[in-house]
Length: 626
Image (cartoon, rainbow, N blue to C red; front, side, top):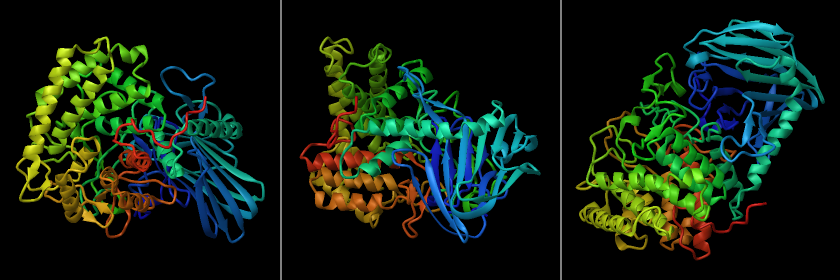
């Protein structure tokens, strides 16, 4: 039975895919060759059937772990009854000599490197390598390729492994025992696909570690945030960078699939896809920190994934091709027995109109970051993109939709959606007016956007307010409270000091709150089980307090929330209010975006500036290094 807490896991990656490694050194999740590819290690979801790469030290007594500063290189120090050893885990990502204008900014080698070094006394133990191809649906065959070298095949896929100690073969597995004195090491390299000989994999470990460290340190050095939460912000930024896909420019919502939001329950979704909302929100976080290239790369992804230039914008995208249909992996028992494990995502077929506003927010933020002088490939598509996106907003302004939370119930007139439609038109107007030659849109067209925006805003202020509840509610003619209303405040869709907004914040805190945490909503959503609190919502409350001038509440709340991350500063999607345990997929981009944007918001509020979810308030930042 899989019983490791979700918070036990660290993440490493190479901007193509990610691997999750438990505190005890067990690599229990890895999809290859990209984030949404089939998992070859997934003991995270089934200890018995799911593959793993496990380190088992004899007579362990304790451990500590950290990321090497400014990197995604994981270092775990183990103590045993006889000695001490340091395990360094990373996925090689080498800097380019010259970073191209578009495309990956590093050279991902398609490997996992695990270096174990004895640093005092003696340590002994074993490596156990047991992949399970295609989500443990394909049989695995293993063959010896030479001393310490093996090859696994299954489901049309291949893994190679090379180790500095001999590997003994078992049924679909390989095991290497070691006994190390001070200064000795047991390196293990796992590579995807066919390629170099095993000796080459091992020969390159030292150089690859140095190159990967240089890549991450240079990337971290460009972070412009210099406020009081720098380490927290930088860790969230490094985590978001791991969720990017260098080849396509896409940004996935989370690294994993199937981790439950409710225990027990059936809310076990696959978030390894590009949600327009999540990715656009990530773009604002990147631009807030000076990472304009990552924002431009996401625009490249959309340019290639949607050649209609916004005419047929989708809620979500796969990194290549269509989002697969939702499928239940019934042969897997799920984390702590919480099934079904789902891959693919049925929400891809939903109608969620707020995405038009979300994308325009991200586009506006990016254009401000480059002083409205984007590269030609972006600039040439702007007139069409603005026309298509604003056209979507105008046509959908009166239509019901499934809303931000992707409820699998009937569509509603969602208040958050209406607010984001206003936000989208408002940002479209700002983009067009930054172009004095009227190349993006003529004055009459822009005036029409303004009129539509005013009408939408007047409507949702009138119809979204529920006098009996004393709050803005989830949808028109609804009594249900919704934490998403707080997010609309952050985009200036509501005035944060308005008495009705203050009343809504108080009502949401009272009825959806669990101490510092917040539930998204409390209603029958057609799913099983009671989900945990949604961590990003708690950060939205921080933002609303800050915008209302209640800094004496906002700052300590923010600090208590960031302390709820795991020992490495990582967050999943949700937190169980009773146990304090992380719930849902890990790491979750939505949470880490909220950490970044609210650290920036607090800095701006402290300096007397007006902060929004957008990157127009880069407070307490330093110029990016040349």
